[in-house]
Length: 422
Image (cartoon, rainbow, N blue to C red; front, top):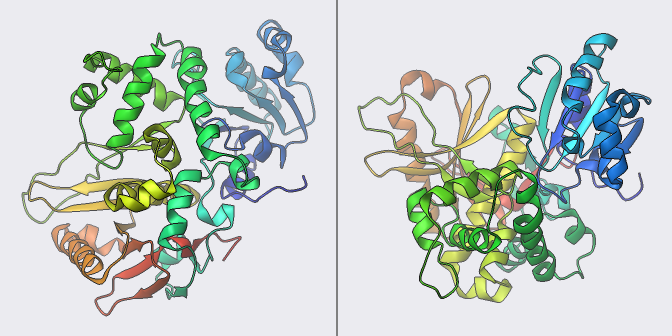
């Protein structure tokens, strides 16, 4: 397909099709799931192209499953019976690589209650990383940070550029057509989420209350704010009322179901001391541009408020770390303990190896402090976990990547690439 920008998950999807009967390509709307799926599909059908197709899939699922493999079933959740139909078809054919299911919402549990173990592999597609959108100089990869490779690079985005990247986000439509208004595009996106997408999850929502909660989330992105505190910050207009904690929890679950909001869970590990670990998650939008849009914050407003830019830059880093970690089979956590030690991100792989990341816009004193935090964490974990440590890293908005004498890597976010771009 002409004009296609390679995605980090391309290799993951291809590999999954060689092992599993079906790949479930999930993620928020407008991140390119269909386009990505079509790169490897031999045939396809879009269930949202007409109401009749969704009805046909419900009444005669095998009809829409017929076609060259792998067959792409776009927005499959519009016909929930397809889950079991695909499962049975995979069992009958007994060969991998039969179907690609794409959708912008996670169906209720009762739809997928029959196990897909050994048949389905879920792969999440997120907004484009800087490597995918072409803003990174791609000097090294996440794998390099786990393999002990030499780290070095110079150039890439400036702080002013990062303000632009936070506002624009990694949405393929805005990356491909930079003259489009990010403000208009993303406000329309949020409006569609509150009025259409959440309704389709089966959750009764009040769009005004959801937007109030989204604004509260945007003000507290990259923090551990509790649901009850969020509800109190979600003021509705000028009425003085706010979203109840019960409604806030329900809306957060619904926003997670449509992949707009993601929790960053706390890392649980063994420490040398008996200091208590904190277990509250941090909150992030799937892309920091949604937080900027909810706040009405443009490039200049962020440059005038470096604290806000710092929080959104951290969220940008988490977005990219998640995509790069997915490729390695990793998960992104955060760390905080009862002594007050915090580390912004822990990437842990399935084999137990891990790397720690502190996020700082820049500045020698800030980087020194971040490096000290990372070394303090290394000294706190158990001997076994210390042996599994791959690297300590300070992620910055600077233009230089290098390894400090104490072994901590200083990594410019705009230097992180993929195997395809480095």
